[in-house]
Length: 170
Figure 1: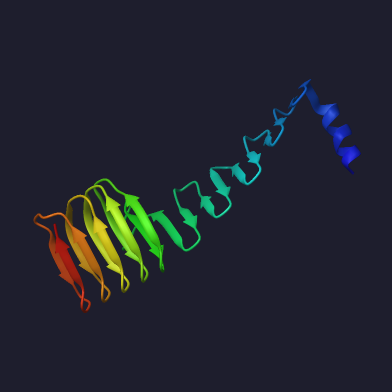
Figure 2: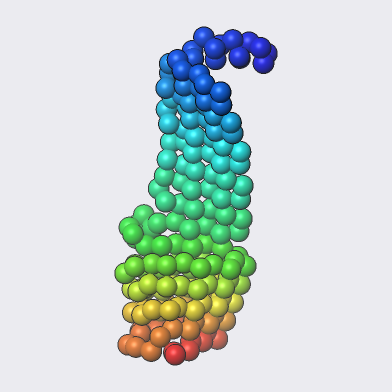
């Protein structure tokens, strides 16, 4: 089968120099890299195709959804997470993130999150989360229990429908 593939590739080869082959369909191969005619890219451990990228333990989709073991970060599309909002879903994650004049939703339990950038509303939907914000937050909404948020001093509105939630201004 390898010999058959080599013959097929040789028939479609337009330019061939040691270590590089350009085919009539627009595909290119070099040691460890293959670029397909539609723009897909494959290298050891990484694949990029139709707006999606993946590597061991990480997947990035065209819509901006990022998935790693135990953590999903995505853009809101309406409802509780509106257009442009950032939604982080995790249980037991250790997360660093940055936003810019956006709403941030943290869903899940036992997360440690460090955030930078101005947050319009931080909504915590889970329990036992510890969140430290470096920049201004307009509003914090607790929808779970035993959460802790540390944030800069300012006129932050706090809405707490859970139990034993705490905050600290610095």
